[in-house]
Length: 288
Image 1 (cartoon, helix red, strand yellow):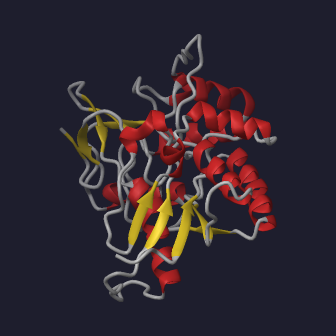
Image 2 (cartoon, rainbow, N blue to C red; image 1 turned 90 degrees about the vertical axis):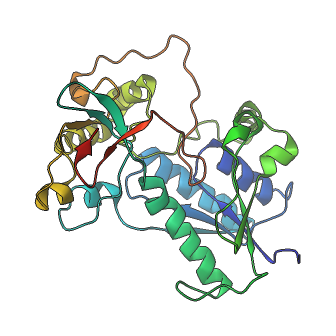
Image 3 (cartoon, rainbow, N blue to C red; image 1 turned 30 degrees about the vertical axis):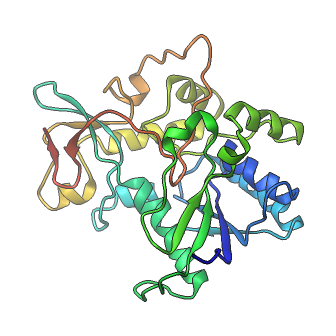
């Protein structure tokens, strides 16, 4: 099999992918034809500021940072005319059943637009078939302590590679490296209203980012009875949706951050954390 002539970075703008971009900019690992950031439209302001900073570093090294998007995930979720890409919302059934909705948001808003951009750069946009043997390498920011999250792409024209695993780096190595180069404040990449936030993250948002907290509270309230599309189609949720695992309104949650904060990973295109078992279908309005 011939070596790939296209090499890209899946840039989530979190700790590990920022480390890979900086390593490439310094020439410590092979460079990238482009660093691709899939914008959900609902990242925290700190992530967008950090992305601007990374863009400057990348441009100085001759690496193009590309922003791609499949839409605004928050606006789309509340639009009755838009298909709802299910988020991993916590569910509470009519008889107290507790579960979690399917997670489709990562695939729809991160992986799909990145694949579309890779196809475009290869010269074969969808639905044109990509010739056999033509492929791109996609570098994914997974460190040694997250090796269980490493997996390959599900298409023949793209092959995921994991440079941090090759280096034997852990997340702590990435944090130290970023701090040594003035990027100690690299934020966690995830949507403002991601249900995977822990209490420490929610508390920090409430205390330091009141606008984003108010936005998340409003969204939590708006999705209580299911997706706007399902309700418009006459399929209201048989139960309730919540952003927080306590399954009460977000502004009523008793936040209990851990006494020793945990540096939790963010949500990258191929590295979104897994949650509770799936027991709800958001599009059909079912909680089982």
